[in-house]
Length: 272
Image 1 (cartoon, rainbow, N blue to C red):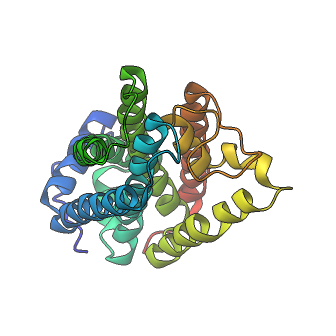
Image 2: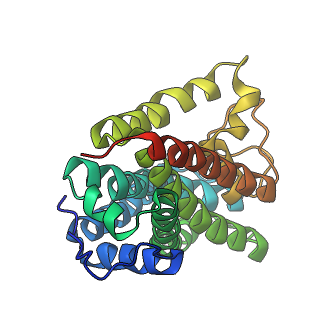
């Protein structure tokens, strides 16, 4: 990735949050790699949704669960990629040594990281809405054509899946920003993310002694946001999902806590 260099000559020492956010929006709009990753997230999300739909059997689950389950697979892949975008937005600046210019433009490091988090969360909201809408538009008619939605889908269930999925991608993107700010090393942060998603969370979902904690992990909270049942698609017995509002608060809490730690540690670090 080539992070956009900043002209800091006109940046006042007391750059406010709104100005910092405008700077981040400009970087987001002019950094091609992030938009390429957005298209990759959409393409992979659609592919996984299609594979999930074609692998489902009629009568296996209630219609609403089948529809939401088809979305979950695509969402999990999509939010992994948008989280990497969030990581790159911060850690990529350290890697490409553009972070010094960013700190000159916005000397208050906490304000800069907060601006990145808010802008990238907004980016995740927009990209998430597109991904969820496209995946839903593919899953619903395809499942219906295969006779797997007999009994219909509830309007409330669809709304929860669409809104919850969009919010989940936005918050996971913000979590990527927080992780990138905390670790600063882009490869290490991406590695931690992938190990967590593909090793740690599945471990909690598969071991009975650890299973009660699964709903409080980011992946469990994402499923609670989108799934209409008490037990999510793919969650093992004993993993009872949270209330969607509580799940949203859990995800936001992760982002806030990690960001707070990142801000506190970044103030003490030197930048070369």
